[in-house]
Image (tube, rainbow, N blue to C red; front, top):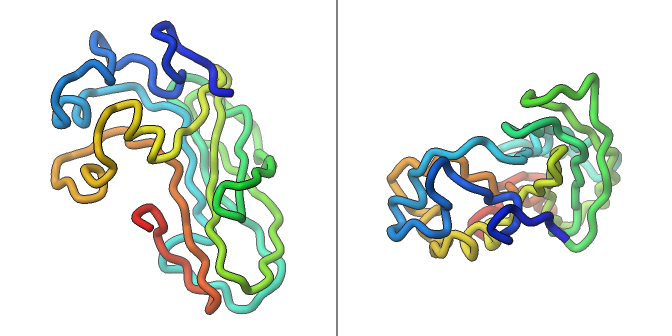
Length: 173
């Protein structure tokens, strides 16, 4: 269960200055309103354009951060988000700073989608792209095709590992 903010919405969305994001009327207003960085994470290995050479042991690594405090945990999924495993946070975890994470992983050569999901000290959980689209009342295609600056799009970034070991952006899949 995701913690709720003052308006009863998932805490990952909160307020954007004087405007609550979901109450803005146009897609442009909602996409461009400045907001403080929320719980975010990204897998840096393996990620887009990289190649796994053979099935076997790998370490999923990445970065997590939050503009509202310290990262408390980063979960990773190697089955498209069906199950989550807590990764190990590296070094000292500081407020409003990048935090490295690592998760041992045995790749069996099958096609998989891997995802990270961070949670910060305020229990704000990084949302999926569908959660962002639902809460902001914006069709997901807007984020995928817009030529406008889309600031603070903190949706979980999925990576697809193909059977040949190639890694592709799975956000639009």
